[in-house]
Length: 267
Image (cartoon, rainbow, N blue to C red; front, side):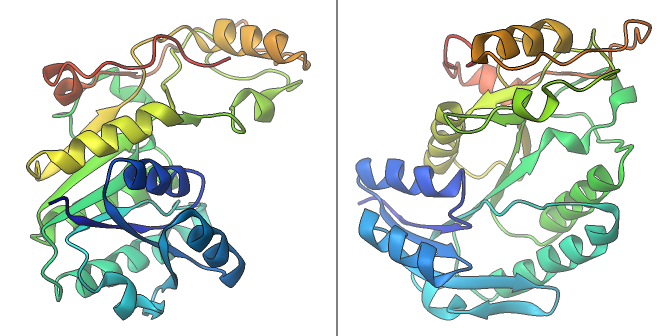
């Protein structure tokens, strides 16, 4: 019998993941912060609850949501800005304190490759992050807290998210003097996010973080120019004098599992 999976944060990633897991035969409980989205989840077959994480605790229907959940996917976006870094880390700490009071068997934590600094060159699953931004430092503090919480967990550092209604080129379209044109892109399609999270649900907890980015890594200039032309929007323009290459991310564990990514990144 498959375990009951809770998804804390049924947004861009969590909602389709819930639908995918339901189709795979899992019982799925999902959280959202608004009653309107709760009704949408109910209509999809998800047992939905309103839960809000704050720096002081888990509010709303937390107790009902977490009851009999054995495997929990935490998929709420950090939305990190410099002024919110401490708030995010405190929310994580509060959540972990609540989870330590439950008999949870596995925690899947959705993180970000933004935890690595651009100066780190080649990084893999074993590389210790050296974040160089406020958001990266917040992510790294959260990762350390998760590791120290002594819960059975696997953390998944996703690259930039790409899906049917989400593509980074829409944020870059028409912009001037963008940095690092020669740096590789580190992106991941929604379908691969769901495939990798499902794989991690089925495996023993790793007690560590893995990287999850598509192996296709054209340069930023090449990929975003092609994507803009494909979508018939103004292409971004890069600083031709910027020759920095930045980090290159490898996915050690996924390579060992022979995980088959989508053939190509979506334009």
